[in-house]
Image (cartoon, rainbow, N blue to C red; front, side):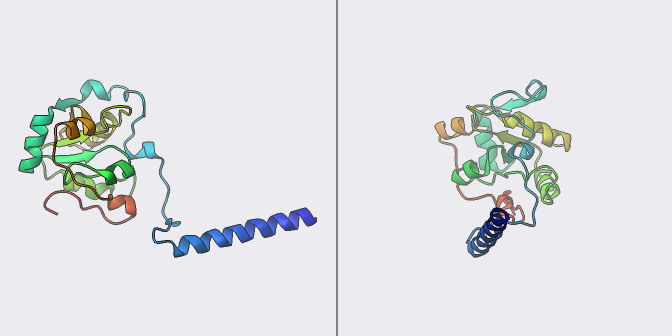
Length: 179
């Protein structure tokens, strides 16, 4: 009985301390919001091609994508994780909220302003772009995948900016050019 009482005190004390620390944190965990698996953000798998998506995914060269970026004639979607996005991304690129997130519809509407959307991932280890491209295509958008991904974009000295994704921090998404 004593062990049970000690366990209850330990669990309640730890939970109380954790909630107090979270409440005072400059970046608290939002306990009222659902948690999504990283794969839900793009419906893609790391380390392998998304079945069928690659066969339907048209590509765009870095030179053509850079011209579209400079002219603001295409929307850009970063299919990498939130941390990678914050470290650097194509100027004005969107980082899509997870499937089913309340900001998902707004992100799609922002992208509909463009005749075409360019999706990119890291271009090396993970193949997230085809899954995200398929998600956007299913929403009725014209999509192409950037050849070489983010690493190729950087190697070609493509324009870049850094900063956290607003939707990833719980704020409404508005990182599309012109917003």
